[in-house]
Length: 277
Image 1 (tube, rainbow, N blue to C red):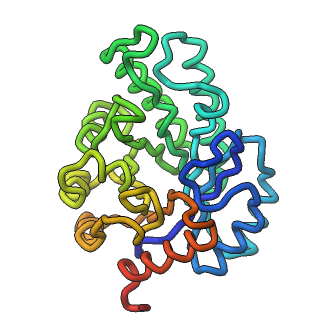
Image 2 (image 1 turned 90 degrees about the vertical axis):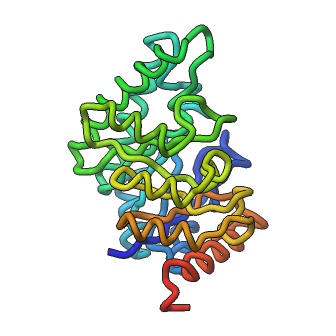
């Protein structure tokens, strides 16, 4: 199976200005994604009850799209929840939010992504070992819950300015190896990797067997092709590890959503579908 393309859609007003290509209008975004040739969409929801399941199924089927993944970040940006908070009640609410997103995404055989909701240590007196334990406990429980739908849970290492839990693929793989569940995989986000990895392609090769999702974006978080990342060795590394998931555009809508989506697809076809170029 070839690597497939996906584009992000945010329905979270509190996240406005963030790195999502399409905004607000789910139906219009699905139409445009289909017209441009994307295989799937990745959506960012305010909560699991914000989109009717039948409506989403109708949109996806009508436009020949799959659901690549569903982000959980609204749990942080909207509700200020994270998995390593010092108060157990807040951590419990964070798990409940993510579990509900897993239930929503799982009905479409799509995984949920934990990124910003992982939190960070050193906040409100939570030291690094305690925070690591809280995160591991959550990944164990939620990874097993995702197994009910036959999908993994996706954990995303972020750059140092957004978390200190895991900043690199190596750190993410260490967390995965520490877990009893084998149903958690990593998200390799090229924007974060450009900041933290000395060699993105080498990091991807080192993540063989653990990488389950890719955010296809450039160094400046603009659409792929509008920054300075050299994609050729990255694509070669993904092929080498036999990655078969999505290359999903989590990028700023620069200079506008339609142009960002078009440029992403051009770059995707250049590197992943060069026989169609």
